[in-house]
Amino acid sequence: MDTEAAREQALAAAREQALDAAEELFYARGIQTVGMDDIRGASGVSLKRLYQLFPAKELLVEAYLKRRDVRWRQRLAEHVDGYEEPEQRILAVFEWLGRWFAEPDFRGCAWINSYGELGATSPRVVTQVRAHKGAFKAYLEGLSSAAGLPDAVTDQLFLLAEGAMVTAGITRGTEPAEQARGAARVLIEAQRP
Image 1: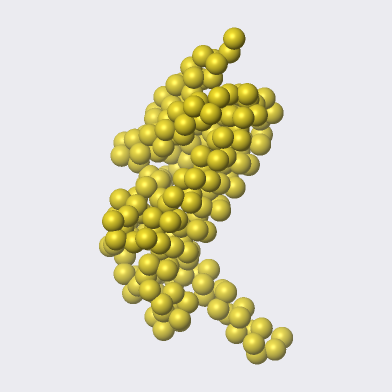
Image 2: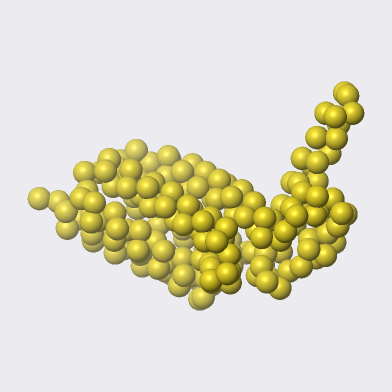
């Protein structure tokens, strides 16, 4: 392996280590309470390398949200793909939310939390939050369309899911997903002739 390839590989590994540490710390403690020195300590990446990879903390937050978005949406899709019937696929979204809410390290929605902390001061965070929420809504639109539901129902399903996320983040319980799933079922059934 030539030195340039080895250097690139080392940078990529350090980037992943830093992102792993950032995700764990930002999600558990909040973004503003975690400094770059905390990330250094948890990741084992030197402060010099950390700032080489992410010249500003906001860039690290942006990368954390982007990477988490990909994994979050992939996990959701994998669960929903276990169902064939279009209406059951919609309800599976809420079932998955309940499973997510039950995870021992669940601390609410990372994007809502980030927006609450930095939405007023960080355009990069706002962009990531809007992109994530837009992609989630588009996913719900696809499921709703496949079930033959009107566009207005997608908006309502999205609000049910988002409300469940906020409530579960506060209560640390799975009940909001179950309640939102019940409301989604009522919405779907109301569309039947």
